Amino acid sequence: MASRERSSSLHVTTDLALFRYFSEAFAESTISAERGTICRMLAELAQDLATFFEAEGRVNGPRPMPSPYSARPRRFLIVEDDATSSTLLAALLAAFGTCTVVGDGREGLIEFLLALESGEMYDALFVDIMMPLTDGRKLLRLIRRAEQERGIGGLDGVKVLMTTSLQDPASVVGSFADGCEGYLVKPVSLPKLTELLEKFGLADSDS
Image (cartoon, rainbow, N blue to C red; front, side):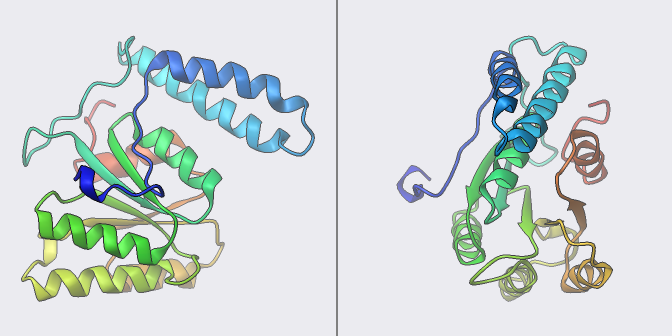
């Protein structure tokens, strides 16, 4: 996999000390008028994660999540063109596994196909609905077509979870028709993310 890593990919690891550091740093940064809102959001998320780890007894950071399919850690692919949204989601997902982040639908399709051919599949994809080049719904249809061509279908397909800031029920309904399993409204919160991951067996039931 190392040979296919691209500069646009972000492999995320984390520990409690890191989140405490960012919580303090972002809280202090709220003096900037331009970045105040974003900094406050990041500080709140960092604090949520710190509280989450402490409640779970993870003083040295998150433990690997056991997989019903293999012993490897969970692997998540985030397809998102907005850097702030992808960074926040990756930070939250770091409690459950490792993340790769790409910036548009075309890169997302390439990354998915490489994983499919290598046999090192992602456990779930988080796909933004609105993106340049190839939007989220088109990417979703291409993913399902690629799986179908390889005889993969039903529960064997990769879990695709759409992310959106749109207040547009038609887009959400259309995404389900295209083959997604769920969706999250941005900005994503840790409780909502955990609930969705638990639904698909991608997080501890008591997390």
